[in-house]
Amino acid sequence: MIRFLFILPILLLLIPKQQASAHAGFEKRVGDTVIYIKHSPISPFVGEKVTFYLSFRDDSIKTNSLNDQDLKNFPVLLSVIDTYYGDESKDEVIYKKQMVTDANGGFEFEYTFDKENYFDIELEFLDRNKNKQSVGFLIQPRSTNNIVYKPISDNKKLFLTFGIGLFGGITATTVLLKRNKKRIEE
Image 1 (spheres, rainbow, N blue to C red):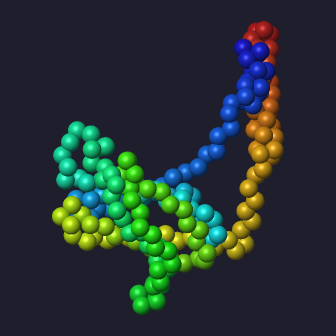
Image 2 (tube, one colour):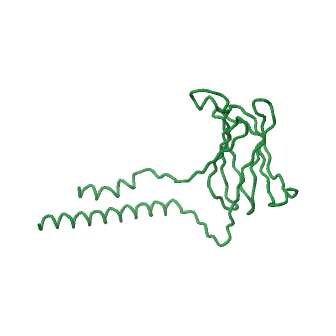
Image 3 (cartoon, rainbow, N blue to C red):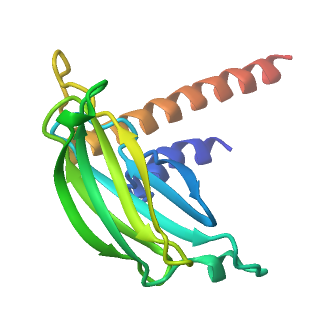
């Protein structure tokens, strides 16, 4: 058991590094079309690149598999609109692109917001009855004022991982040695 605790920090160093990130998503329904959007990071800063993934599904298709409901090769007009609360006349389209969904019924795009404000991700498409539909998702990037954001370099990550593993290993070894010493004394 004690040998295992000495080997544990070394094993932690051998585990491949993985970057953890959180993804949020939500969906809206327009008729029988369900649109799911997720973006990373969840709460972006101004100037930070945001990756969006949108997927489209037709709930009117009755099947045993959700994959059969995916709207493949589905044309969607994507717009990013700089919105002004309380005065729609000031809204400005700042990005517009015709997108087509992939074999999974989705597409991905990246956008970097240049200021703190509310932005609308607007989607326009034709439903299965050829009626024009639109739906929007509101995004609000956060200001970077008074926030110091410094990504941790790979060397610092490695040092931090090693340090935490070493500290955990030493702590666990010390606790187990004290336990064994008490058992031997009894």
